[in-house]
Image 1: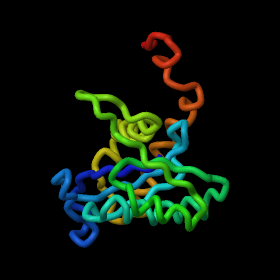
Image 2: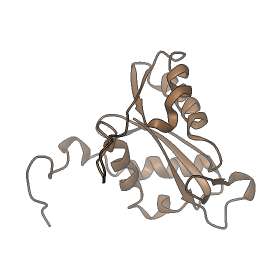
Image 3: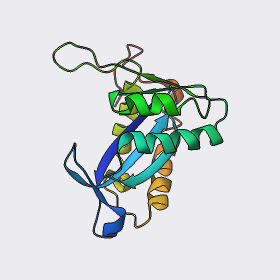
Image 4: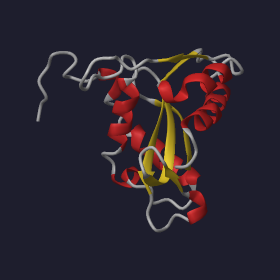
Length: 168
């Protein structure tokens, strides 16, 4: 699953490392993430927020193909439509675009809610909630560190999906 998230930056980040995400009107950086079906992060790319989703997605697919050669399929939203579909053939990854349902109101995108949940869990941690790091590679390391704390809980799954109540 491929997705991107724009986050604001602190005063530590140089102006050259930031950008403006015109769609969300956010000044800062953008995190491009690929997760597996459990929501575990496979690849991360941190860029200026002005970098478009398809551009970051192409770079991320190249990284994914090099780091995980057994991955053969990826899913993306409408923002990655044509460019990733064509680019995925290069690293031998089939890219499927998940269409948004035509119903009114909120409905999670099928098979793509996993990535949204991962990005939401990332925001629970203090350091990745706002990008404080001067270098993008440090920001990437903080994302991996935050996601490592979620890994022991992931294979068990979400108790609400199994019909259990949340224990306190």
